[in-house]
Amino acid sequence: MPECISLLRTPLGQTVRLQSLDPLHPSLRRRLTDMGIHEGSIIRLKKISLLGGPIVIECNGQLVGLRQNQVKQLEVVPTWT
Image (cartoon, rainbow, N blue to C red; front, side, top):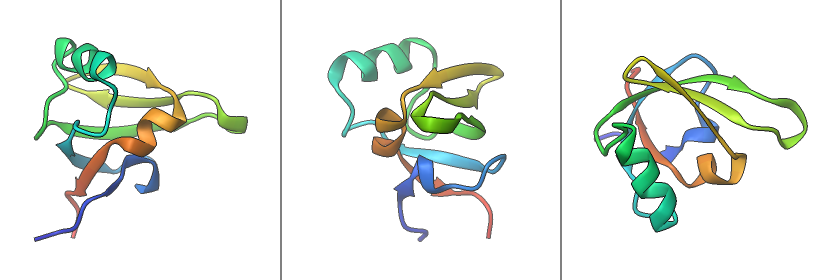
């Protein structure tokens, strides 16, 4: 079984499976689930902005911008081997 890593540690453009939303603040967890991002969703890291700017992820065909400290808390499992 692959181990969980932070989404911020995944290579740009790679797909991962979202393992847990538990570490997130409840309001952010609800916002993500309202957009269809649930545990088990496939996520692709699309863009990392310079100087601590937002991170863009793709899930279910939609792009979502998140703060870097929020992305660090997302636990994912790599889909590549």
